[in-house]
Length: 228
Image (cartoon, rainbow, N blue to C red; front, side, top):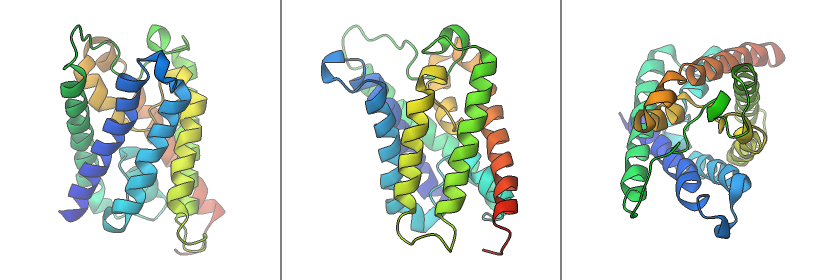
């Protein structure tokens, strides 16, 4: 139960910090955070929670990460569904808090609410294929970073930095394409509040990250066959 609570809190913080920077701060050009600021915010949420909660739950905060670690031999199958449930509920809680804050301003309109999308709902107008490729590849690389940085032979104490900076880089690349998911819990939390098109396109932001995570888990097993 402690592990599940940690996953809930960590995913809540990821959504509140990352999506919150997009909904609250990036909405004001004079603050100047833009895409880069949002990317940094997402990286910081993971970096801070890896060090705060990693020793409790392993700091997944993402169903795709849990799947990739399971395939990579780092995570017990029996914990997979409970972890995913805690992550999705934590993401929804974070989005709910963000909605309560954002809607406290006169004239509030939910808009995209930092939801993920493709086609007309892609920040840069990228089509479904581009979104699919982007999410698969970005999640693949994210899991390679996580599996490598947390390997027993990796330098100790730096995993949080590598993972946080990796997620920042991923957002810098792919925010224009899909608003960056690589995390089905993060996508689900925002889609629930936006509804309509965000729910209709949510399938891609479950399918692509899970595929990318599976591929990374298999690939890392081949790259690093020794028992962890």
